[in-house]
Image (cartoon, rainbow, N blue to C red; front, side, top):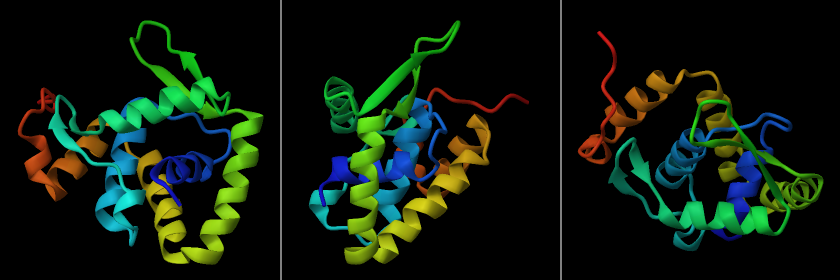
Length: 147
C-alpha cells in the first residue's frame, strides 16, 4: 500500500468524523514514526510552524479532493477546512482497510489507535504530545501554550 492509501485508511478510521489539517498532519506523522510501514508508505516530514509537516501530504489531499474522494468544508473565521471522505472515498477506504487488515494488521491497529488518540485531544494537547515525543520537530514551532 502507498502512503495516500494509508491516508484514506486513517481518515476512514472514524467514519463521518471531519478532521482539521493539523490532526491529519500529526496523525500521519505519528503513523510514519510508530507503525511498521514500508518507506513507500510513509510521508516525509520536516519541522514547521506547528510541528511536523509534509508537503507531499498536502499534495495528496489536493489530489484526493480532485478525484472526489475527499470533501473540504470551510470553517467560519478560519483559513483552513475540515476534511471528510466522500462516498467514493469511503468505498475506496473500505477496500483499503480490508486489504490492510489482511496484509498489515499491526499497522491497521496502529491507525485506529492513533485516530482515537488524536480525536480525544485538544489542539494544544496534541501539539504538546507530539513535541514531547519528537522535540526535533518543534524547533520551528510558533505554538506556545497559553499560561
